[in-house]
Length: 197
Image (cartoon, rainbow, N blue to C red):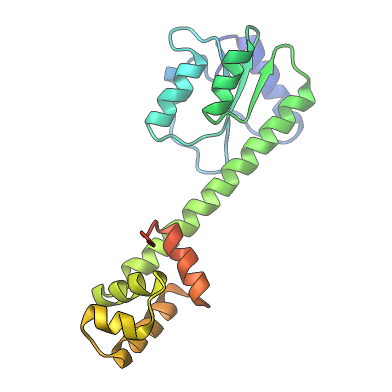
């Protein structure tokens, strides 16, 4: 939670504690940046009006730095264009003070679930990348051809090898990538950002 008002920080911390959520308090964006990245699902409750850098500018700075954390904005001085800008930049919620406690708790739960899903997806993608890295260069070539929809005969012609060899490599690719079907392998290739055209 980043807010320059200590009473607001303590109030929100107390509210989060009532539902078993742990929180860290920061008086400025610089303080927040000085802390180590969270190891588990997290979110940032961020005041729009901060000394120095505004909350909206800080959101942009985090995005440019590749810091992926769901943000819930709170403000006493919000307007519609500001809230639209924040939401378009990926904010989970934009709450105007004084806000309903339940609205904040709901937004925090939604943000935590969003971060859980993002972390799960990153872990799965890292595992796919690890499997792909274990393929031999020839198996990678075969995989690229297969996920483009090429038949074994076409792959053999493309790579200058026999159809039997392609079948062997294709089987190894399916096994190493832990793909149960061609559709499964195509989905994996999409996750790995293969050019499928």
